Image (tube, rainbow, N blue to C red; front, side, top):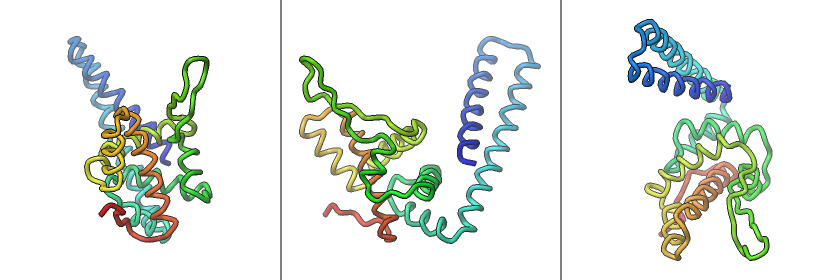
Length: 191
């Protein structure tokens, strides 16, 4: 259901872009009305699917408990918690490092010729999940004390902001894994 929800959200954005183009190019009223109809239909179906997913989570005790724990983490909201629940309940991870590697938020070292010690994000796994984690990390560097401390430490040490943000994504995944593994609410490690 989450994949379908994501696809509908992409379609919704595409239709909004089409409407904007139609309005700018003075398209016929029929085109504008048709596009508005599709936007409204997609919006209704997106809301219906969100309700179905949330109903399933709320009716399954373990999912509801895990979601409540994830929501105690600053920067984890409804959207990211849904995706993380699906991930953690569909795969069995032993360590936070396994989750980070599965999602592709670990550094991958590139060395060739004169390029030594260059690292990029490995980008294995779901790009959609990484995009959600990226947005979560943006929020986390402002509101999550652990992620904020890591980000600021790396930036102050001279690391590029994008590398620090990638490290923040990994830290956010590790925090989520820890909260679910230990079945305890988030508590900041920063004093």
